[in-house]
Image 1: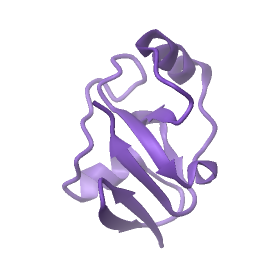
Image 2 (image 1 turned 135 degrees about the horizontal axis):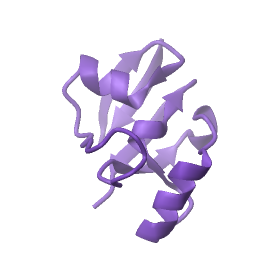
Image 3 (image 1 turned 90 degrees about the horizontal axis):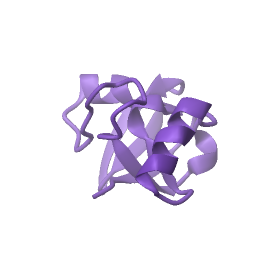
Image 4 (image 1 turned 180 degrees about the vertical axis):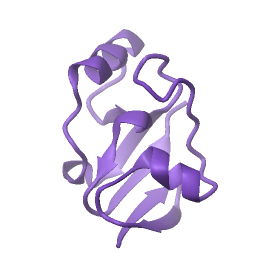
Length: 91
């Protein structure tokens, strides 16, 4: 099991879980819209452990570019977690 800390609150999930699966299992501060890297509603900022996430695909990079956010941001709907991470919901 790994720990995903969202806005200071820790959640335990198996390695290889997506943040969508985490949110389906637990009440989190994550907000999802389309769940398909289209709307940008689920922008998060990774505060530690970014190397424990899958690499972003082009669809995600395109949305992040349109939203004009820097490199420590991701779309929660596209993240698979392989180790401990900490994140915040972006404003």
